Length: 104
Image (tube, rainbow, N blue to C red; front, side):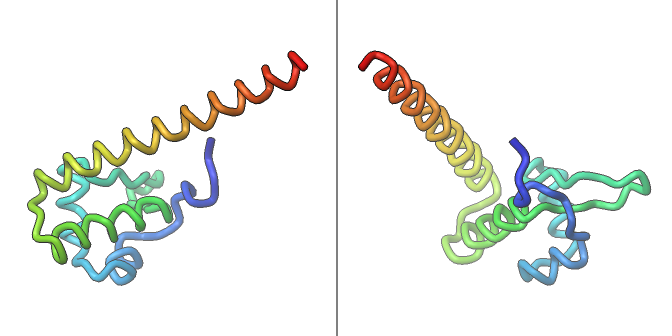
């Protein structure tokens, strides 16, 4: 499900200023697969609000907590998995509630 948070609308220069990182750092993070901005037909990187939040999280982990990029990758992968599982649990709870309502 796509939301406004997922709509790619920020260029690399804007995002670099928003998160306080150099554009080359953002390119490096993309190369490592930590973020995956969408590309326009002219090959311009566009970042969504969700990716900006992810970059802020990466910045916090590396700068404030001193975690290296390999550790950041593991943390992000685990966070993504937890988020997916939480969504799955919420959907299952909705289904269960619907079944209970029908059985009454």
